[in-house]
Amino acid sequence: MQPSATGQVGNKKLDIPESGRHDKTSSYLGALEVEPHPNLRRFQLVLHFHASYRGEFGRRSVLLAKDVELIEYRAPALAAEGVSAHFSGERRAAAPVLDVACGTGKVAKMMEREGFRHFVGVDCSEGMLRSARRSGLYRELKAAVLGDQPLPVPSGEFEVVIIVGALSSSHISVCVIRELCRAAKQGGLVCMTAKCDSENLDYKAALEGEMKQMEDEGLWRRVDVIHVTEWQRGVTDHERGYIPGCVYLFEKL
Image 1: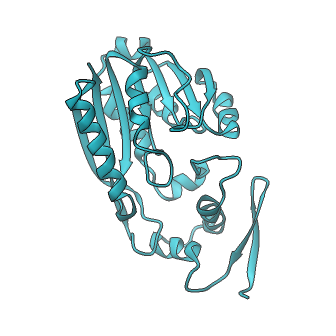
Image 2: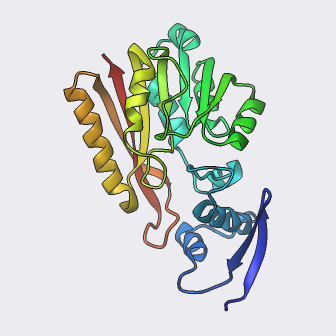
C-alpha cells in the first residue's frame, strides 16, 4: 500500500497517493510545465476530485475558479466573444440567453462583459445553482440532468442558447444539442464548445455528425466554427502544453 496524503475539497475528504505509476494526479501536475506555484497542491487535490467524485456535482465535474485559472481555461471567454460578434450592442442588451450547464456562472459573467443582460441558467447540480444564484446574474435558475430529460424551458424562447464545457465524452450525450436547438428562437444563435484533445476526438466526431444531420434536416445552419489552438493547458501525461478546442455557432431556421 502506498503512503497517502489526505486533503479536502468542500465536504469531500480525499486520499491521494504520493507517488506511483498509476497516480493520475501526479501526471496532471507533470504535464503542466509551469514554475512551482503556491496553489499547486490545492490544484492537485481538486484535479483528483475532478477525476473521481460524482456526488453533489452530478455528471459534470467542476474545477473551482482559482484552479480553472491555473489551467488557463479560455472557453467561456471565447464563446462569449464568438456570440457577441453576431449581435449589435442594442440587441445584446435585450436578448434572452439560456446558459446550459451554467455551473457557477462563469459564462454569464463573460457574456455580461460583452453587453448581454438577461440570463436563465440550467444545471444538474444544486450546489452549482446555489453559486450561480449568488452571482446575481440570472433572472431564473433551473435544475435538470442534461441528456436524461428535456430542458425545463419553453420551445423557441431564447435569442442565444449556449453550452460551454459540458460537451465531452465523460459528461453528456450528443443528443442534447437537439434540445438546445428547440429552446432557441427562429433566427436565434446556438453556441457550443468542445475540446479537441485525444480523449475527446471520437465524441467530437459524433457531435459534428449530429450537427450535420440537424443541418440536413433543416433545423439550423452553420454560422461559424472557430478553431482555437490554445484552449487550455493539458492535464494528463500524454497531453503536454496546450490542447486545442472549438466554438460552434449555428442559427436556428
